[in-house]
Image (cartoon, rainbow, N blue to C red; front, top):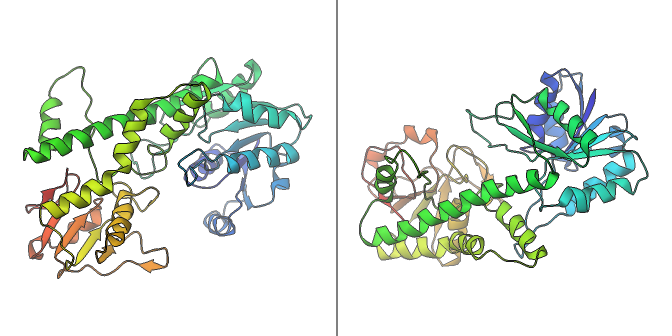
Length: 388
């Protein structure tokens, strides 16, 4: 069986590896020349893999999996342009009888209302289904193989084919009755996290006024063996899913003539986080206009070089927009927007740890004379201020 993977980012690349491990021939498609160059070099000794930007290379693929990004536009609304373009090109170049699977996140009903109509316009006999991605970059415990995959198809034959495909690369595949259930489950699971993390942020702001440590409160509440699940505040909710997926769920509400004030409020709390954090730093007199401020860790989460929707990067830009002079240090993110990571500055007035990295264990925090602030628990043996 030959598999085509459309989009070779954090979702598509692990899928390529999984398919190769199951002895399948794979062609990877991406419109970014640099991505093609990098992945071709990485897999140069793998004769069963080809990286290409030419959709005609998918012609003889029996299974085509679409893993392109579905971000938000500048207005914060779903941007499906990459997905729509990929569907149209797949329909144009695939062979009749192929199975097309969408892993990209989209609104509820997207397979039935958007994907299938575009595919079937080609006049080819195609099968299609959904299997929303559940990749957590950098997670060493949960991978594509051991994370349960939820799948469904446009009809029973499509469902059976989607199940068979993933059953060979995933340990647990759950078939649900309709594509809408699979699509909604992806949006719901990440919206669930957004709402609960936003709740801890808001409660943390209250507790900060009372000089109460939010993490100790969460630890205490977690002793209850039922009815409670711990979520933790951070600088801001970042990454490829939690800040994005709720907007797609909101779009489904809007299409149905409904609204969710809970989701909207949670997004608002996250969006307003930079104003709160800056005001808090000023109130605690940790920063002033003359301060030398260095932010440590630009990734959106612990031990990550991924800066998508990163709270650390947002804080860096926000402080600069407010007139503060800032620099940043990150051993994994060496350059962004034509700026380079600075050296670790022990002469700074304050270090703000946006997201912790294991590499920071080598930093001599005891020698740092300035203030130290963080937005989550950090692994240092000295006092620091939790900004919540």
